[in-house]
Image (tube, rainbow, N blue to C red; front, side, top):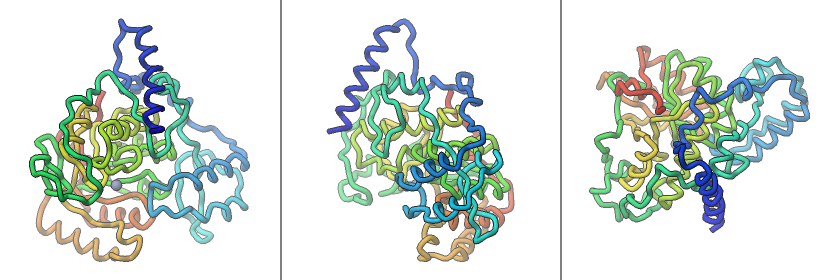
Length: 370
Ligand SMILES: [Zn+2]
């Protein structure tokens, strides 16, 4: 109920703003095109005081750990005890564990500021928590969404074939993407403190399906991904099982993920991967209104299983070699959420050892919406 109250409050704010400026219809999703963003204002200049840094890292450590395994990064306090103000290069570019001295080296970054344009659209003053509120927008019409029942994750018992569920029936719609002409990796769930290592060592351009809540937490990493020529795509705001949500909450998961990427890197994402591959035509009817193309995969590494050792790295590599023997092209599902899956991703890129494509290039499509 709290969410609806927030949405109503926000709606009245938006409605007031609209009535004052009816001659200039705008699509708020596109407001912060690169032309309108002052990137220089968003980079943090050193020096940063160790006290401020500690505060940031503690906020980070106590926040929702939607990346990785959910474990608190316990090395933070120990490292901060010896912390000295690093060079600008060190502090700006993301979290990570590398170097000597037990392999611990900390990068800190400030949360992405909540931009004024988003404040005027939403009536809010800061980024939401995992349960982002739905903000009604002119271009989004939820009344046309088909009435398909909500369902919990993994429950396919009442899903009709006509609903075109990917996770239940591997059904894909004509505008969905599932494979690629050349074998290409994709990375979900980040950015995480381990993402910078992947950026350091990946020899190819790839696609990152990011969670908005992590995008605003590691904005410097996101900008680095963008600057280095990788494709930024949406993996919802907080990794929601979309078929389990109301229409409004699905739209909220999408709009906030778009805004997060938009505010951070100055681009409007075009490609989107539903968490767990969970989708049906109710979800698609909403995500299409945001201009998003749904992307799945045809080869799954199950790399996250190396985190609890229920799968070994070598088993992943053997499967990749098998795929290479079977087919020239595939879209491979991986994750940049932990150091273990990042290490797997680096090794898989060495195994593939040929030119890969971003999802946009797989279909010869535009990289972003504008
Ligand atoms: Zn995911």
